[in-house]
Image (cartoon, rainbow, N blue to C red):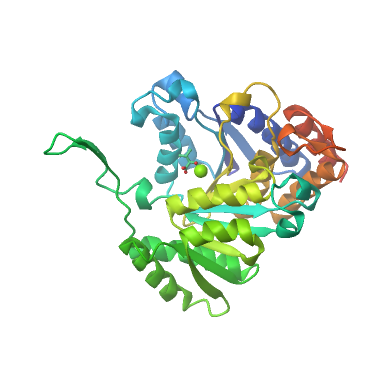
Amino acid sequence: MSKKILILPGDGIGIEIVTEAVKVLEYLLKSEGLAIELEQGLIGGSAYEAHGAPLPAATLELAQQADAVLLGAVGGPQWEALDRPLRPEQGLLQIRAGLGLFANLRPAVLFPQLADASTLKPEVVAGLDIMIVRELTGGIYFGQPRGIHTDENGLKVGVNTLVYNEAEIERIARVAFTIASKRGKRVCSVDKANVLESSELWRQTVITASKSFADIALSHMYVDNAAMQLVKAPKQFDVMVTGNMFGDILSDAAAMLTGSIGMLPSASLDADGKGMYEPIHGSAPDIAGKGVANPLAAILSVAMMMRYSLDLPAVAKRIDAAVAAVLDNKLRTADIFSPGSKQVGTAEMGDAVLAALQNQ
Ligand code: IPM
Ligand code: MG
């Protein structure tokens, strides 16, 4: 039976960048003779417009049947006033939960060609290669109770719950240790164990899980210090593992070290390696439809898909090499532009990656 990839462009620039990623994907399937079918679905605001829900049942079903999902981005100002369950972001949270995608891998890698694009000094970021492993289906994003109610004094109260059980912590820790064992063999676990009980359990459980990974050096850092260290001396990190909300925040900070969030892909994996792949950046409504967004994060997300869900590391390398070649040729979208390079739009960048693949 041939494999299936579900394409979910979503909203805003998601639509433009996924078009480029699909161009690359279709070319690779053909040139590598891979029997993989592509299907399309709706998620986010566009799904709400068509079906009244940010994750229609039909989309979740397609995703459950697919071997991997490629997602663009969701959200836009026109949907911000909707009731929370109808907002585009809920579609993303629901598909993560619905597919059991508990392990979110967010690499922050600096392409040497883009050292100038970082706001940090080149010597601070040159050679940067961090993997943030973020827990994605638990913690304060999903904890109960939650909601807004009125207390006995008539004051409105907003409640969210930061909760982790040891099984959730252990499985994400094991993912981090396994990834570290294939690279720098160092894991820094980020928590707030000086204040939060859930972090105290996090730290104890990570330590226990580390016992079966003898070759990994485990360290611990409080999240406030981790944020500071990321901008002060980011190269000290190899793999970082952390909970859902800390990971959300730290991964945006780490992304910016590389010059542009427009360059970074991510993978969200279940226990069996099935995954959803998406750029870290959002739907960027301010530039949507203008053809200026950077499609490289979406294209690099296809590379991660090849690596983690389709077991095609050689194809992933082809994509990485094609992106490097395009950057060597000094093509840049607006977000990574620097004087002396050539500014191109979304489609031109996608075409350039395609041409680089054809020239390999
Ligand atoms: C991310 C995003 C999402 C998150 C939002 C859009 C729900 O910020 O993937 O990092 O907070 O997880
Ligand atoms: Mg985020």
